[in-house]
Length: 489
Ligand code: AMP
Ligand code: MG
Image 1 (spheres, rainbow, N blue to C red):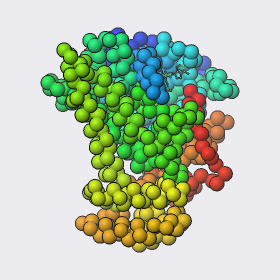
Image 2: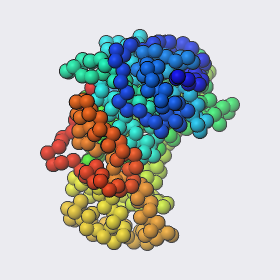
Image 3: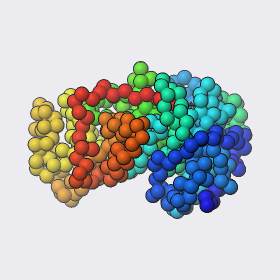
Image 4: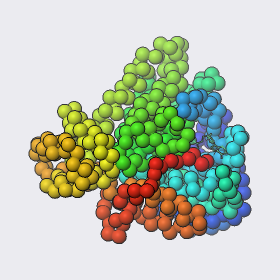
């Protein structure tokens, strides 16, 4: 029997910011993937989730007692253009649970049918994008990067029409919340400052409770969200992740990566890498991500001005602007820390940036594989630079760079062993490489989920080389690419 102890604070406290709603009925639900470890963390019974009642909840067909399914309202800037109303067009917040660590978690469905926010959409999701979000989100979690998690992927038994008929599925995902920058924009766009305040107070209570009661709580909240977001993007950059749709509705207040659409990891290092078919201008290219995160935060700042200074919102501009300007500095620090660790440095300083940039410049110039080059660097720290030389195909500056780097490592208190340990923990062996993801999705489409399961297994321990998984560490075969991802929603 499916028994879940829900505690639905969003439904309870934010009336008017959602529409209570039910999902459509999935004709023949079938469990494709269930994340049993996550289910257990949430205190959910994995057996019960696989029962007809469990499948009904995970597809949105019918809800267990205590759930309060709803479609959330939000707005958003998409590729720079503002839509005053987006909202959960094909998603439902099922409810919230408190996990074993005492943390509040949303259970949320994607692909559960049309809602009043669906506009022209069919409310559905195809199997491919659902599994893609499952695979990449779980890979991110294993890499230690804040992200929503995948709880389950369930086939609906329905065909959804995209460019071609495709099998339908629903993703059940779990997140610290689904509050977005766009949630705040929704109320600013309507001039509804009272709702904006209710939302901000709720967000502070939920994500930054230590700020409650402070006179400057809204400014401090902006600062906290900014710090989380810039730290997150630095982590993306350090593994070569391109989100692809950094619209303000896909920018979570919690600091988690959310809404995996046309995202991908770079194989060959290229700062201008873009994978999304719709990102023709390269707005969300790899190298632009820190800047676009800052842009999104500026949109959040605008919504908070009337709360920071209710009498005269404009008077809050200088302080808010100072926070947004500060985002660049936070990013610089976080990037230095992350990339410094990739080079084996315990406490990288400003002077080390030349070393970091020097290495990345060589990768870009030679079109080297990002992930493998950093792994090869670990051997180089141990004195064997052969693999690195091969990756960098004798880049002209390599020997010079190695000399400078080794000298810098000599200054580390814990010596080469310490550096190697740091590098092993910062440079993954396994990332969800595009050709592997595509192969998994193609097999799944044909009814075979084994390829996906095995890929998930490889990605679950990304920093540990594992016998039998050599192919998962290898770069794309030479015929693969250029890689294009489609929103395919
Ligand atoms: P996304 O690209 O998933 O971040 O979605 C952007 C907006 O479009 C959100 O408001 C979604 O709810 C909506 N949307 C995307 N796909 C669909 C669909 N198939 N049916 C209804 N709404 C959708
Ligand atoms: Mg979205």
